[in-house]
Image 1 (spheres, one colour):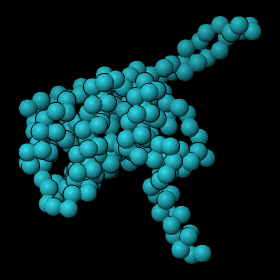
Image 2 (tube, rainbow, N blue to C red):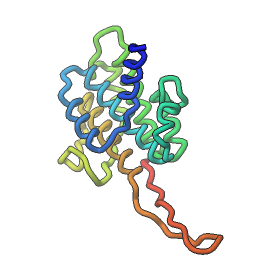
Image 3 (cartoon, rainbow, N blue to C red):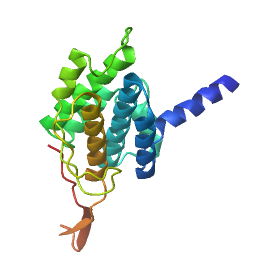
Length: 199
């Protein structure tokens, strides 16, 4: 029974939802990674966590349902399924969807390759070149440069796209106030304003 409680405790770590403070610390941890494989996996995992947090916020999913929806074999248990769902609920359009698909495939190649891999390898370098550096939305972000160099390649391009996309996903799902409308039953109703979508 002790092993089951240890496993449950590990699952709770995996199920924890990212906060803005967690995001900054994760970026620092990822940036300190010395290998291409490790850094790429960490940057993409941070992005997947931001995507999960964005879906939770957009759909207002309660804490009781996180594991049931995002658990290992649950409906949104994979990066791929989260990408599909977030696109379906309007978090982003084709450009961000394409970026996320490339990032997911690059991460999978890094995580599962049985041979040494680096971002300089032609296949991975070409995939990185195919991802577009998005415009950063305003708000908290650890980078000082507002417009990153679009000529970045390889790991540098992968990193900045993961970080900006993570930032943007968390910004578009942040509360934006309310809109007051007339109720058909008399009086008024305050509705949360729908956040914008990414391209």
